[in-house]
Length: 124
Image (cartoon, rainbow, N blue to C red; front, top):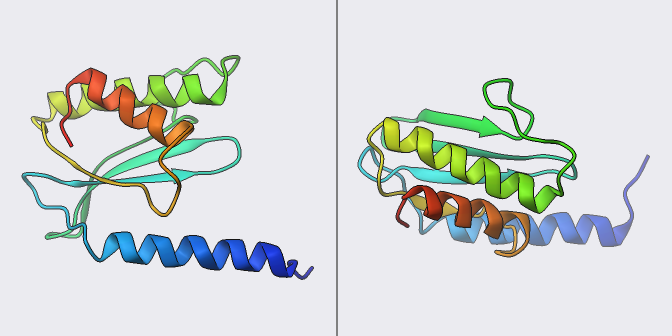
């Protein structure tokens, strides 16, 4: 099934934003890059060390490692995920990160995730 022209344009524009952001952000061991992916139902976050091409930490709202209440709204789930992600990152001795919003606008679930991480003590 072919996508409509407006859907193709939307995907193309997000991809352009994503690449322009990624040109400026580079994660290291001291300050890894936090990449966010947002789907219709879930949100996931990864800490990436670009210098060594390794994923340091990864969590999602549908991870089996943590329990997030699915009866809450998606924004509240994102905030909870951010808090838990921040707590786990603090245990791994990661205090400072570089936030890569991956082409998504910084509001709604992406902002709630960032606020949860800030509440847990991460700086970016």
